[in-house]
Image (cartoon, rainbow, N blue to C red; front, side, top):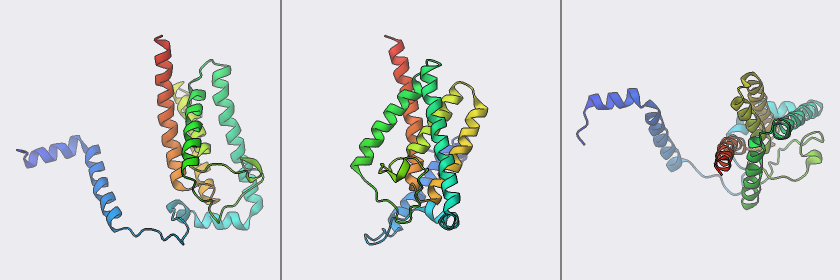
Length: 212
């Protein structure tokens, strides 16, 4: 309680990250107190949908383009699965596979616990995974989580260029998913966070098993 102005300047200079989050907390508190809740009769508000309105119109007016991009996105799904399974079966590194086991188990539990409605603007495609527009849990994104897991494992093995390629493809995948209303923004954000968390957890599990 004896802080001076110089102490405040010191904290701001050398501990700017907590200061930045402190500002974020104040902004978040203000938004939460002043924001009007979405009426039950209205569709969910998603800032990612707002940002991709023009892209949605392009996809809606060009079903062939939507089909091609959906197919390419499915190819990315095959690529990430092939890498993750290959890391286990060929290289003997099960960490990424363990991550996916943790990831999808949690996703199934949360996805079933709170089932978000499918956007009425959803643009499906027969070439998109899951194929033929099969029912699947939206929260959180398995597409994004799988690609993030593959990228994390590539960085662990110092395959930085390949990881960068996957990161770029992941961003493009997120834009397409928002543009086709295939996922809400929160699904994508939590998909990335969950992959990071479970990859770390899988690493700790491996370390624990080595000590036995």
